[in-house]
Each structure stands twice: as structure tokens, then as C-alpha cells.
Amino acid sequence: MSNLLGRGTRIAIGLASLLAASPGAIADARAWLSGGTAADAVLTLRSIDEADNAMRSLVRSSEIDWLPRASRLLEATNLSTGTDTTRSMVIAVLPAPHAESLPRIVTILPTRSSDQLIDAFDARRVDEATDLYSFSFAGREYHGRVLPDGHFAISADADTLVSLATDNSETDSPAPVRLELLGGGSIASLNALLTQAGADDLPTEAFAPILRQADGVIFDLTPDAQSLRADVLITPLDGGDLDGETGGDRPETLGPAPFPATDYVLLAHGRLDHPLFARWTKTLLADTLGLAEDDSKALQRASLLISAPETLFGSGGATVSLALEGEDPQSVQAAVRQALSRADGATLEAGASSRVGVRLDHLRFAAPTNANGERPNLGGGIGGMLLGGGRMDPGADQSIAGRMFTRNGRVYLTSATEGEKLDRLIAFSDRTTSVESTGPLNTWLDRLGREQDVRLALNIAPIVKWFAGPARITLPEEIAPVVGGLRTEEGVIRATVLVPAEVIKTLEQFRRVASSMERDR
Image (tube, rainbow, N blue to C red; front, side, top):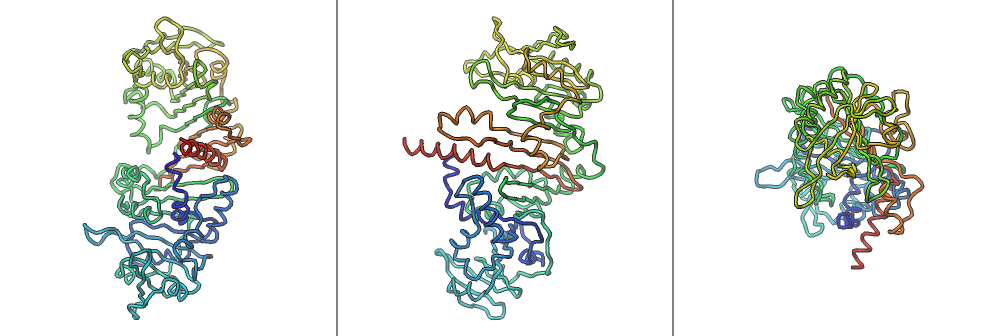
């Protein structure tokens, strides 16, 4: 991690162009790309001044002094003189004119005085009719064009600047920073833009499957004193795998996660009856639960909770619980039982015991036997789920045990075989306060927005507390969880992640300790 984050100076200069703040309309710099110019990728900052204000807020709360600042970008590139920092700026990537050439990059700056920018670069006019200039910067030759509405465009390709035209439109954006990949975009264009921003080693190939299925992708970033928010909006490609699965009436909304309040590490809660997730559901449930396709059709919701470990090692590991909901819970339980009967190394005793009036199936998964001590993916994935936090049974075969039961219209599978955690899970009902409705998680899910088709929460607090003492790190009094959501809107798929400032601060403290240890080697 320290190698990645240690690029502080370069990222502070380059990625400053990715951060801004304050709502409103994108100023007319963006309009120069809507007058017939075909761009693959466009990065828009609404206001350079507001960028600094937003980042100062996040810097103060997270205590990370190398976070990007827009003013540093301007100073580092000699653009602060003559730039109107109250307005927006745009960086665009245009397709390569030939197969063997590179994508073309254009930067459009708002100016107080284009003459000041021209003087700062010691630029010389090369074409009076188009107001085109030429100058050298950092050992490379660039061109600049004075646009008639107070903007100055910069590119290494003069023909690109001459072709710029505007329709004088304004584009409303709910986010302070917007990165658009248009017409599906391309990995080459994304790489070119990130290289310009000093982030050329990011794993952009991970976006390739999304770009292949998208007519357009938008990344919105919103920093403030409380968090860093990222939204990804995907417009499906006509005729693609996602086409036709985002419109129409929304099915019943997702209710609270069906788990009692507990100290958790990971929580996932999602709807499986939404058309967008229908095809994914079949594969997911086949891989993780061993359920046949016909069995998975009856499922409507699935929820996963991994509780905080009581100890890092030994028998106090995390408890893993899974809840499945469908119109007929008895059929769901029967399908899971059938899946287990087909799985190697898994056994099930139906109704083997009773606890607080509820019959429990006893699950058992054979212990690992390979030379490396690795645990096999038993039970079509159910064993793997329980192995993630399950405890070795003290029996002679050292197998992994779990429990399954039906309660309040849900089928629960859990690695808790006894004790308070199992009792509280059995006692949970729709009248019980959900884990999502308590503490910081409740607050941050409200900020995220409850109207999601999938909700996720990652809570690092129970983990970092084990390492803070040895690392001599003072943790914040309260560390809120990272929360995320996935939903469909009319014609668009939206994914959102909220990272609280105290999470950024805590991870930065650990990064500094790791860097110090690395230097002391």
C-alpha cells in the first residue's frame, strides 16, 4: 500500500484536476465539446476555487496533507497566471485519427486574460485567422487557441484546436467533478486521461467489461469535510447484455437487513428478483450455494453478515450468517437441503435439535485434507461460506459445523452453533431493530439513500483496533463504516460508495506506520 500511496507529490499535482465542489451548472467550457467535437472521455471541474475549498475541508478532517488540490495543478503547470479560477475547466480525450497514433488530449481553461497565459508560456502566434499559438513546455511542443468566449484551449495537435466548436449550451451536473466516458469510451482514452492526471498505473483494465456493455459511463466525485463520495452511472449499450433491464416499474423496494444489531465487519443486503440481477443471481447462487437454476428462481432477497471476531486467532473467529427470502421459505430450505445432499464432504441432519422452539438442521463439512492445509470449496460454496468464520468442531474429525433454520419467512444459515449469537438470530423478527437501523451505519445509510437494490457496508473499526496499540496509533472515537449501494434508475445503472473521512484518516495513519517501517529496514 505504501508504494501506491507514496506517489503523493505526483498525485497531488495530477489528480487535483479530479476534485471540486458546490452544486450548479457546468460552465461553458464543456460546451466546446458539444458543438460537433467527438470526445471519448471528458473530465470537467465546475470551479477551480471551489475545488480547493472542498479539498481543504477533506484535508482538515482526514489529516492527509498530500490529497490533490486544484491550485497545485495550476501552479505546477504555469497556468495560474491569467486563469479565472471561479469558472470550470475541461480536459478531453479525442479518438486517435489513425490506428497507429495516440488519442488526442485537449485542455480548455477559463481565463481572466488570455494575454497573460500567452505571456506566461512565451507563446508565439502562428495563425491569426484562428488565433492559434505555439509554445514549448516541459520539453514538448504545444499549441494554444484563444476561444472567443474567454477560454484558452491547449493541445499538442493544432488541427484539433482549429476544429473546436461550441453550441453555447450548459450541462447540469449534480456532482462537482465529472468524468465521462462517451459512446462506450475506450481503455486507450481512459489511460491517456489518467496519464495526463498523473495516475497512469491504475488498473484500468478492470473497467473493460463495463465499457464493452455501456453506451456511456459517468464517474462523479464529491469531496467534503465528512466523506468522499463516488457515483458511477452506466447507460447500457443498445442490444447489450444490460439493455432493457433498467426501465419500467420498480419492483418492491428493499427493506432492512434481517439481522439484529451486532458488531459486524461486512454486511450485504440485496434484491434478487430485480431483472437487472436475474442473470447474475443464477450463476451466483449456483457457485456459492450449489442451487440449481430452478431452485434459485424462487429467491427474492439474500443477505450476508460477517460479525466482528472476538479474537484474531483461535476459536473466537467471526460468525458468518446468510439469510435467504422467497415466497415459500420451506421450498427454499428444501432446495438448500437438496444442494447439500449432492455436495462432496457435506452432511446434513434435518431437524437434529431444537432451540427456543425452533428446529435446527445441523450442517457439517469435512475438514481440509490437502497437503497445503487449504480448505476445499465444500457444499457447493456453503461450506466455504461457513469456513470463512466457522470454528473447528472439537470432534475427532475436526470438521466444520453450522446450523440452518426457517424463521419468520426466511431461511438462515450460520456458523454459530450455540450461544447468544445463535439465540439472537433465531429471535430476530420484523419487529426487531435491524443492524442497519443502529449506530453510525443508520446515519451513513441515510446519507447514501435507502432506495437501493443492493446495500453494502464495510466496518473496519473492529479490525483496526487489534493493530492500533502495537502500531501506536490513536484511533478516532468513532469510525463510521464505508457504505455502498447499487440501484437502477430509468435507463441508468447507478453505483455509489461513501468513504467517511475518519476511515481515510485511519488508513493514512497505518500507511505512515508501514512507510516508516519500510524505511527503517
